[in-house]
Amino acid sequence: MRKVFICSLLCVFTFILIQGEAFAQTHHSQSRPAQTTRILFVFDASLSMYGRWDGEAKITIARRLMHDLLDSLRHTDNLQMALRVYGHQHQFPPQVCDDTRLEVPFGHDNVDRLKHKIKTIVPRGTTPIALSLEKAAGDFPHCADCRNIIILITDGIEECGGDPCEVSLRLQQHGIFLKPFIIGVGDGMREAFECVGTYFDARDQEGFRYALNVAIHKALNPTTAQVNLLDIEGHPVETDVNMTFYNKTTGVMMHNLIHTINAKGFPDTLDLDPMVDYQMAVHTIPPISVDSFGLSTGKHNIIGLDAPQGYLQVAFQGRGHRDHFVNCIIRKNGEMNTLNVQEIGKKEKYLVGSYDLEILTRPRIYVEGIRVRQSHTTTVEIPTPGLVMVRMGTMGYGSVYKYEDNDSLTWVYNLPEDQQQQSLFLLPGHYKVVFRARSITQARYTREVDFEVRPGRAITVSIYN
Image 1 (spheres, rainbow, N blue to C red):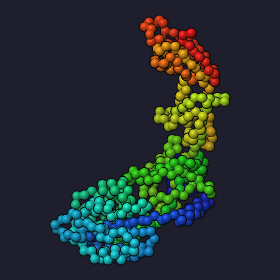
Image 2: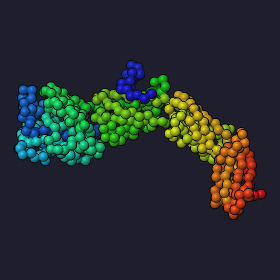
Image 3: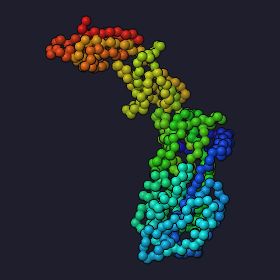
Image 4: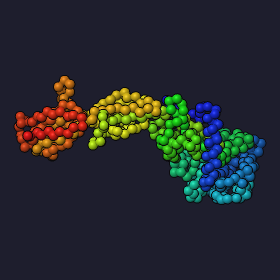
């Protein structure tokens, strides 16, 4: 049962309390320095922008709507903007494919500069989109706590042989900027640009205005989230496990956050960027993965996953056995993949389900179909071993075997060839040691010694009395 859902309908009352908690968390976070958002507008000034569109030249409409947008952003806190233009320096023909330039760098209170530059741009040339994105990497000065966003406005596709998709993905992978927005002035370009970023078809002026507003809304509005790790009854009470968030587009790891239940009893509020499409791994045993999810901008998002858990412990019978450390291999029932190697005596959390155990005693113990139940500790007890000192008295070749119920022998351990004695912890039972000295070259001089191991007892077994 693995599912992701946004705005989980736990209950209306819980939702109201969560929204209140989100507000409190947001209010508390205001004491921290706010992150700066930097938006680079990459503006198409190729010759085709003189084409007619919705009753006017494309460049005229683009200028007007950009001016309105910039005026609306004039007094926005923690926002910097810049402008890169392509296709405006060289007349077409001939085709000049390095025609791209940063016209207004990032800065505060530069709206008038941006408006003036857009107003005075004269469309002339071609459309080097890939090169413009490549050059845009250098337009963002170093900043330790900035969100870098590109809004590309174009009326055509790449004309200079570059690969905007490859460039965009590479620069996103290097953390230069987040997934770009592309606004196509006209339609029919979606296939070319969906791999570059989030694409909008602006079929008319209203479509253009809408696309600009959506891009700015996603870029600027605060967005919060919480991860509900649900128990077997659907309550968000599971916690204290690491969650790794990846950028689904680039595969880059974004966050590692250990899940927490806050002081009010709700999963803690997280600051996640709505510009990113996420993948998530929750490091329960076994892990839970979420292949893809996005966030609704400007809202408190709830991400729910089924993660019911209980505890599993393997312990020695009686008072226990502290002189020897033994591990236990944990696998899902009927599968060979190792989920965990757990120390005997340690309690570990697992998802509710059925598990097989391979306990690395001598000889090994195999236990199948152990059930882990919600919020319950399942304890598997095993016999306490005894300590056996095997004294060979000389170097040689030998092994230790355990008698089975039908008097057959099961191999347990090979004695070291270069030592004259060996200490072993063995489970209770009847054993045989078989040994031949290295100096003896006749098999008939092989020695056999039977012995019994009792729980918690120590014995010495001598090959040569």
